[in-house]
Amino acid sequence: MITEAANTPEEGFHIAEAGGVLTIDLDAIAANWRFLRQKISGSECSAVVKANAYGLGIEKVVPALAAAGCRTFFVALLSEGIRVRKLLPDATIYVLNGLFPGTAETYIAHNLRPVLNSMPEVSEWAAFSKGQNALFPAALHVDTGMTRLGLSIAEAIAMKGGKLAASFECSLLMSHFTSSEEPSHPTHRRQIEAFQRAREAFPDTPASMANSSGIFLPQTPHYDLVRPGYALYGGNPLPDEANPMRPVVRLEGRIVQIRSVEAGTKAGYNNRWSANKKARLATISIGYFDGYPRSASATDLKKKAGIPSGSAIVAGQLCPFAGNISMDLTIIDITDVDPKAAAPGDLVTLIGDELSIDRVGENAGTIGYEILTNLGQRYYRRYIGEAV
Ligand SMILES: *Cc1c(COP(=O)(O)O)cnc(C)c1O
Image (cartoon, rainbow, N blue to C red; front, side, top):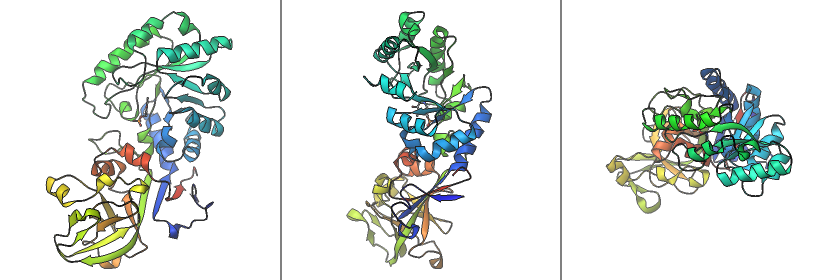
């Protein structure tokens, strides 16, 4: 089943008018969640849907995950939590970025749980709970090495048996890996040891540590609940191995025009690319405004230095970019494509098949996470799958 959603058709824009087509496979997201759940049998598999479900749309992704059986969700912000609550009256929803001062009442109004990331947040939640004569649930985040958010292990241990800990319901004790996508990184052992010390202070509280890649670590730090995000959306949790996840996103860009150029012809802003032989170039209607990073531009200098740049797939053929990516346009070199196989109006693949989100990230000098979460807002968005 296919629905033409998001910015279509309400705004009345037809697929033929779109510079790019973004297809999101909700069945693949559900299958990825089921795959992870089966892998961690014994603990609970939640879903991280922060950043608008990694850019793919909370309103579409969350119901698909709930239909697959997911009951616990993590978002970054209160506003995202409220969106998830509107979709799922009964789910458990945690807000990772924590309790911003003065927001406790809104949490309770929407039955959301903050992840308490500092002692002032713990104090505010405890005081609010006490004032309402209730034990409101919240997660406690301990810092085991990220140095970003979370109580120190000493602070967590000091709470043991004290007034603060008795003033609210600590429903989850969590920490976060710094480097789980590098299975042999020495920090995992240290982080797990530190987390273990915090767990001893909260022996009856469910625990959670693993993100997508964490689920695959040989130490299997699954505890009571895992928190995958990226892998649900098709990202590879094992960068050095074949991706076990199903791809979720396909991005296609439309060819606007095709031209033949002589050897030595320069192309794009600042003329940073030149044809080393007679070539055929296609200009496609996607640029950095659409979230395709300009850092994937193809220049002579980068080529000489062996730095990767972006490419597209045209009629099954990998075609390198040519020149700087513009705001709304990108030039690609289709010299090796059968001239009958590409014409203005055709769609070429920018994400999909061998161009995984991870590969596109590498080609832009970044990570697949950033590619996914930056996907632009003016694509013709199409959701596919039974879950639609
Ligand atoms: C984003 C996030 C996750 C999910 O991480 P992925 O690598 O996308 O699986 C899990 N836990 C916390 C605390 C996060 O911030």
